[in-house]
Length: 113
Image (cartoon, rainbow, N blue to C red):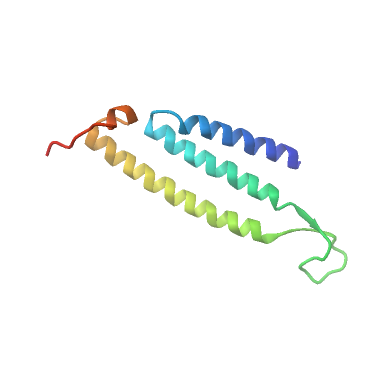
């Protein structure tokens, strides 16, 4: 099962890299969002099942999951959502001012107010 999630996180990171290298601002924002999801999945896979002393008081439990990576990923999901929302608002404002979301046309744009 861990192998499948590692491969899936690799596919997500590869697709995100492709999207980030495009010229459209919307694709770049989607690529950053997909990259954060791939990294979250990779971190969740790294917090694998533990063996040994359990954090609960029953002797019958031998396998458990470490809660620290899950808590860190939950915080990272909230931060990446806020970053995506802020980036989308900036891209919308940029599109309203310049009339394009292509990074090549934004390069030398001057505000003529």
